[in-house]
Length: 329
Picture 1 (spheres, rainbow, N blue to C red):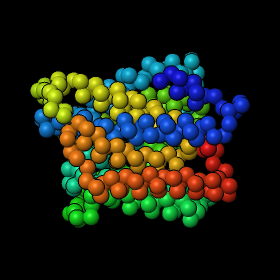
Picture 2 (picture 1 turned 180 degrees about the vertical axis):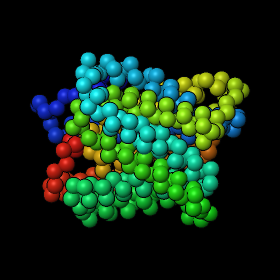
Picture 3 (picture 1 turned 60 degrees about the vertical axis):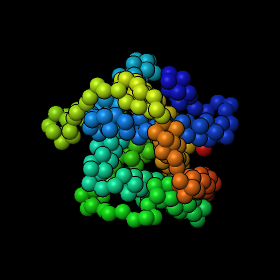
């Protein structure tokens, strides 16, 4: 993890313009695959009696415990960076970490998972609109075409064609999660703060854990846990093993690589690559929970990947017309 922070701190030099794009895509896919693992790991815990709130709080808290020491080390004594960006770190923890998590799980308490995910994953479109309104970076036809393919692929992966009931309350919570998700990508892509990616991740996870704990204390997020064994692919394990994996892999590694990816790709492209998290989630459910994906879901995954390629090609046209400081493609 320290190497990620050190790498993000270096700019310029003899590195070619292509290198950040290649490493950025690798980091973005790593983030998506690790984030996508969370559902498959959490499902048996939920079935064993854990509440969603207790799983999320433990996941984020463990992630914070793992990342904070590395985040402090990456600072190298430059605590003025934390003081100068304290507001940004708090905003990141409240919206990008706690807000996205609490909004999503509140949404699925009132509506089906598929529609809730679809609404949350309109975040890439929100990121495009943000840069259009804030920086005058109007998306071109290629970018819009890629976004349309991603949207269609997402509908197929989530198997929404059969129709689903919507709840107004659930939709509002899902939109809250979408705002948190969009904030995650926008802040991730901003390298003007001087904060190493791992330090931003550490601060955000720490603030998010505190916020989620407070929600639990006041009763807005139910907390319940059990100590029974859980099963994955027919193998029973102690509860703490998947919980440790949730904190280390789906929180610590996922957030650090996600921030580092956005520093290299820019917020827009990183947000669309992150849609592959949905595909990864389906595949992880297949491997760990024996939930075989349908053919339509695999087709949706292909469309998402083609859409990401379209957005990547469209980025060159966008960047030719406007300057986006945080994009390093």
